[in-house]
Image (cartoon, rainbow, N blue to C red):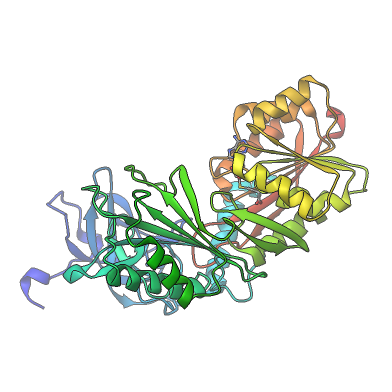
Length: 466
Ligand code: SAH
């Protein structure tokens, strides 16, 4: 090893020298809840993706404006539990953080994270896992840009950066999507359609979003572009359909603003009906481009079954499904209860939900568009009687209005589903203070290979608070 590349062990490194791109050998003692190795360098705890407790590795320090991070250059001593990722981009890509961990290790990591946040309320059930934890995502997103030598590439953003990594095969997505994306890339070359450049605002094709029906095998392709002026539009559409007759609908979405959001407001249906259908727990669902739909339908079915088990319905209940999306939970539980009221903010999702009730000939469910908290406060004012509230909010959790409204509506049972146990624990602390007691706590692996966790928690109103 020459002098320039010489590396030091972390135990000796304390001086505040120029540290950007510095290489060193580190010993990792522990991992954090997101599955990153934590090493101590420059008197700081620095998170290192793709590094396990008990491992020794050469890392390269990366200096960010607010903090330090690092990437693994070479593992010198690996720990039991490390597995070879299926994907050769796993260490660089921001999509999967845990592909280098065995299934058992991923489970333990997620269970421990939930225990830390919610364990004080009672035992945490063993995580519900997936038998085949690959190829599960039904919503696939890829970004177009120019790669080396001016070649059009598409893929995922590199971890902590805005560089696109070229992805030919993503192992957590429905494989049919990779083939469609490859066809889109080659059609762009053939028809001289340029990828959009975020910095200059030039070019046309920005992203593609593909939705697949896991049971129906229906496919929606959403082309996200900078304008409605689609060069070679008819040639593009007919060539894409010729190669992939399995596509049911193609939508053009316009997004020309500087944003991290994939989809813009404006949309045109170019082919088909603008939505696909899929089946979940025996109900059929219409899904539009912009509506939320669980990305892992195999695990979503297990989640909804668990919700029904926890709710222990007698058949007489009036249930509120808050943050109801396209109505999946409301419709799936409808045959177990007297009535369901769904509340959802997104206009397109509510439209889908109303259509879905009709599709399944379900008549004891009503959907309302509005903020869940405000709508529930109005219901409390009108002295509406609700037996069970099932809520499934976005990652940010629910707001004060919602938590106040629950305490005024006083449902007997609350079932809280979340994809972010941090905000879930924050909200549950408020509910526990307000007279609820935590029952079952069930983590579920909705997003294998990634650090994301889904948790469903049952809460009962305390007897003396009734
Ligand atoms: N329960 C559904 C959807 C859950 S995703 C399912 O399992 O499929 C969360 C949903 O909350 C999204 O559809 C989003 O549009 C909606 N949402 C976000 N903020 C909201 C608010 N303040 N009030 C009501 N709904 C909201």
